[in-house]
Image 1 (tube, rainbow, N blue to C red):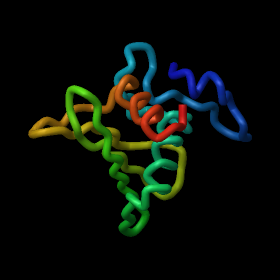
Image 2 (image 1 turned 60 degrees about the horizontal axis):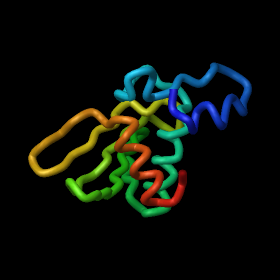
Image 3 (image 1 turned 60 degrees about the vertical axis):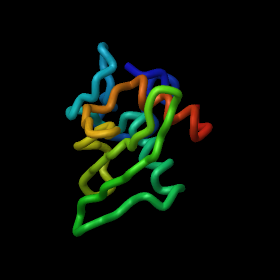
Amino acid sequence: MCMACEKRGKTWNGDDPKCGFPNDGAFDIGNWNCATLNILRGIAEELGQIQCMEDTSIAIIPISDDDRAGWIVLSWYKSRGRTSTARFIFDDTDIPLTLEIAQAALIKYKKA
């Protein structure tokens, strides 16, 4: 479980949260109200990097470090808690988002 999920805990009535990065730090599509993914969605909103079509949203967050520059791409249905897609795209590579990359974005955008 990511530190952001542990720190936030459950702050609502309804289903329990399910971290988007359980155990091995790889993105899990079965997430629900993951604090890290919700913070990333907020960063994209602050950057004006969200596009919506009908009830689906997509967000793009630029991120770079010493090794590579790329984009975190997230998508979700309505404004519900599950993030259905979380990818990291760089050069000609497209990989599932990892907790390590997500945390690097939180640090870059001063949310960690």
